[in-house]
Amino acid sequence: MHITVRLYSTLRDKLPPEKRGVATVDLPPASTLKDLLTMLGIDIKVICSINGQVEQDLSTPLQEGDEVRIFRPSAGG
Image (tube, rainbow, N blue to C red):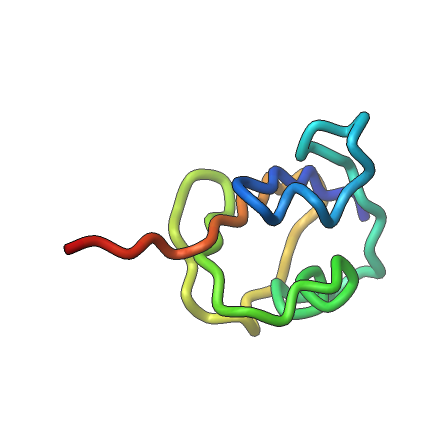
């Protein structure tokens, strides 16, 4: 299945520079958000949204055509 991924901040380094933080990736059917993060080599705490909805459960299954946005948490004070 094909998933569109948008990476922000320093996470953009996980993709080639010419992708500018956006790529379509191919995952096996029944892949989860955790599978996507593993494939991208992201092993830090991140915030993910699927089709505009923040998703905290990394075991959430992905569907064909989903758009996943991945952010680093920001610190405030």
